[in-house]
Amino acid sequence: MTRDRGSDPSRRTGRTLITGTGTGTDADTDTRPGPGPAPGPGRRLLLRAAGGMGAGLLLGACAAEGLRTAGAPATGLPSTFGSPGALGAVGGPGPSGASGTPGAPGAPGSLSSPPPPAPQSGADATYTGDLRLVALSAALEHQAVGVYAAALTTLRTGRLGSVPAALESFLTKAMAQHADHATAWNGVLTGAGRSPLTGVPLSNQREVASALEHAGHVSDVAKLALQLEEQAAQTCLFAAFEVKDPAGARTAATVAPVEAMHVAVLRLLLGRPPVPDALLPVDRAAGPTLLTV
Amino acid sequence: MGRPEQAGARWVRETAGRPGGRWRRPATSPSPDVSSTSAAARGTAHEIAALSAAAALENLAVSVHRTARSLPFVRHGGRALTDVLDAARRHHEEHARRFDAAAVRAGGRARRGTDPAYARPVERSLRAVRTPMELIKLLLALEDLAARTYTKDMGEVDDPRLRRLFGSVAPVEAQHRAVLLALEALSAAGDDALTALPTDAAGLPASVGDAGFPETFCPSTPPAPAALALPVAPLSAGGAR
Image 1 (tube, helix red, strand yellow):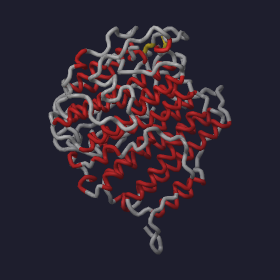
Image 2 (cartoon, chains in turn cyan, red):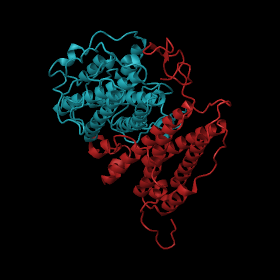
Image 3 (cartoon, one colour):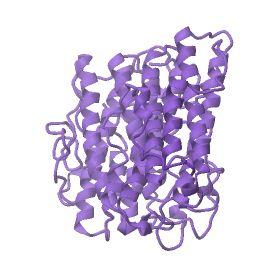
Image 4 (cartoon, chains in turn cyan, green):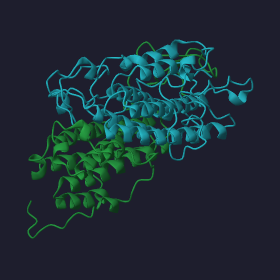
């Protein structure tokens, strides 16, 4: 695997395709492993961090925790997710094509929704083998939809300052695509005779919601979105490698590039080299045990 | 689901073969060195042909990026485009090496050249481009062709290592396309200050945020070569550039 980092002119010189004003800080730097960017006055973000919230390592840590966890956590979504107004009411315009989609804003699985139902005792609601990766992918899509809906609501309050139009348009369109992806993943599940996945049965949901709730600047939201997108892209890619079911493999193969495009655009908006790797890695893919059903 | 001992597998099952068994991350997680096919694993004719065709596409992309870098409006233009060209060229070079290595290990040969069916319209288009926008459109067509082709290939090869190779490259071509689409949106905004470095973040048009991913699913039907014959402006008399 070649990671085109050190040789990237924009990285080497500290320049970025789109930069903001001000000076770079640690919070601006890429949290990916490997040699970091050379510090320099040009290493600036389009969206500046007001404070480090540590979201950069959040998802990876949660994924690792999910990998280490033997069983599914007994709890569903933490109670804070159901606190009306904690992140602003989750709602707003639903993504196109997502009406009735589980996990769409306002539907079960959005941040303000109640916890998803406990898995039923029958095999219909259990996800094993290939279908566990499919269900995990569906849950990640639901998580992104819920987070983006809540993020848009928060951003529009003005609490985080002026919101770049490009970030708002990104969140809006990406949310719609994630909802459509979730529908496709659930189609794979139902095609295999399983129940569609509902809600966000992920063990890191509490941390993700907390990161959004504690965002102090629009760049915090963008960084959280980048973490979600990287995880979704790499999880889809891993699913494309591993899932043998034709419908599942096809879905994974056609979704992964789109999630990767989301990553590239967010990195561009954040002033980072948009395409750092010659081959998309899977080191940030979610582990199957992140799924709690 | 892949077995734990598969090369490049990110997770392994602690209880191999038991559905729903626990998973764990290996102590060391090797990158999916998808080109390291053992000599014993010979590919099918279709797989070797797909690898050869992919290498030819990458060779074409490398050639176009090199030529584009020498165009006057690129050499004397903004840094954003040259950075994109340089980074993408390096990626395409790496992809070509990966596809060639996989083809050789599968019993085929490295592909040194391009596919004339694609190269001819691309070369014609490249000779005719006169503006960054026209160049971006040509590069977009190339990246789209590559992403679609490899997405299709991924579904047509049986060797899991080749699936990994095609699967790992396709999203990167899609990312190249996303960046080009964003640059195109920036250029279309008509504000030179935005394409300069550094730009005014708050002034970025909304289109930069959502232009980079036009489709919800990556198509897996490669376009015909004619799609690479772009409707660029005709050359002026003499055609000198």
